[in-house]
Amino acid sequence: RFTGTSEMTLLWLSRQLWRHRVKGLLVTLVVTVVLMLLAIQSLQPDSTRGHPTESKRRRPPPLAFLKIHKTGSSTVQNLLFRLGEKEKAAFAFPYYTYQFAYPERPLLPQVAQRQRRGWKCAAQFDILCSHMRLDLAQLRQVMPQNTVFFTLLRDPVRTFESVFSYFTATVPAFAQAKAAAAVARKSALSVFLESPESFWDPGEIRNGLAKNPMCFDLGLNSQGWNASWPEDLAQLEDAFQLVMIAEHFDESLVLLGALLGLDHEDLAYVRLNARSAGSVATLDEGTVGRLRSWNALDVLLYDFFLQLFWEKAELYGLDRLERDAALLREAAERLRQTCVARRGVPPGDLEDLLRPWQTDTATVVGYELRANLSQQQQGRCVRLTLPELQYHAHLYFLQGRLDSLFTRPPPVDKGEHGIHLHRGGEHLRGKDGRGT
Ligand SMILES: Nc1ncnc2c1ncn2[C@@H]1O[C@H](COP(=O)(O)OS(=O)(=O)O)[C@@H](OP(=O)(O)O)[C@H]1O
Image 1 (cartoon, rainbow, N blue to C red):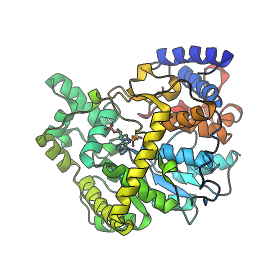
Image 2: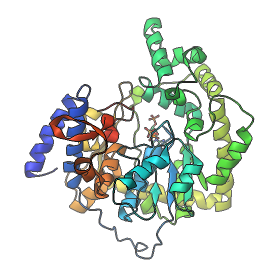
Image 3: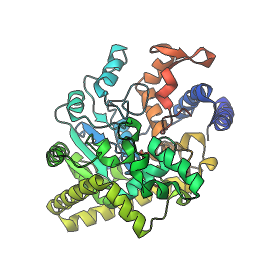
Image 4: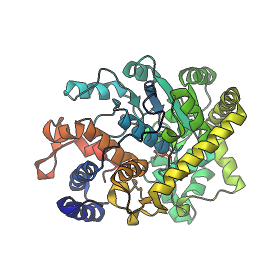
């Protein structure tokens, strides 16, 4: 796909990256950064698509999307990345990484640190959509006053199953259940659900996702029922102009489009970060019941916002919503037909640029693009399928920040090859918190 020296370097780097995937922490991080730089520089600029409304369209307001784990949030983030890149938006990114100090919440220091270090910073941010644990007060200080806040929820049973599968090795409560399951010769999830309390230490912050993960990401007290719950929900209802629902993804996007003045072409997407069928557990009725009871606050949260969602849908008009969702599906299907040769592609078959981050316990599939795309189509199609970490790296580069990674290092460990990396090299750390 890429030509000449760049192609040979890429091939070499690809092999190195794959070979050292598990053990080569610092070396691989350096390789990853260079690889991203080379590959991403090869992307053609996303030239405007020239549909009739393009020139007349008003610029969307500033946006803050709370990216809640395992709800379909990477699909929405990709859409915002594409939109923001086209509009030359200023992204409020975390410092050298893809998430805001998760699961801690020092959002402001992370943003301010960049400014202190002299990175090019716009007067105000247009889009914030990286993982964080919500802290409304800080978020309001970072983003302009007229920011539109929105987020996405997913059925709590499916969300937890996905969280468990993806983070089995890194959430301590899950890892302990996995160890016990190996002895009992059962699945880690079923062992965990038999007695979740016995694996769960609520004082361990890395266990945040182990119970009511959506509430946790929303910054709520997610450990159990508490008196402030109704008030907390009311605050969220106040703060978020839209809470989308993954089970009604297209309808949610139509409502988002109406809120932001976007059309179907802007909203077209492919489903990102999906696990292979083999990584998804089949849940019997008993397991579903146990999942719902362990995640009772997430169930309440979801039911509350599902009702609100339908109220918004009724205001929009249910028939109109279905019509517009059908048009969006058509636009998305056209784009998929143009771009995608094969979906559900296992990681080993994907080129590095398009390979989603993998964990030890879940296989995440991706897309193979059609051959013979024009340069313009290639730019658009690569962006459509570009996984979260790679797209972060690309936008960092565009905003002149990856450059700073090499020329203006923060206080650091000195990595191999004499290149300074931020401590632990979080910049391109994997989504389970380990290096690549
Ligand atoms: N459009 C749409 N509709 C419904 N569901 C979707 C959609 N896009 C992604 N997904 C599913 O969301 C899961 C990935 O979620 P995230 O991208 O939020 O994960 S992450 O926290 O950023 O790693 C992942 O779920 P699992 O496959 O069950 O793990 C995706 O399949």
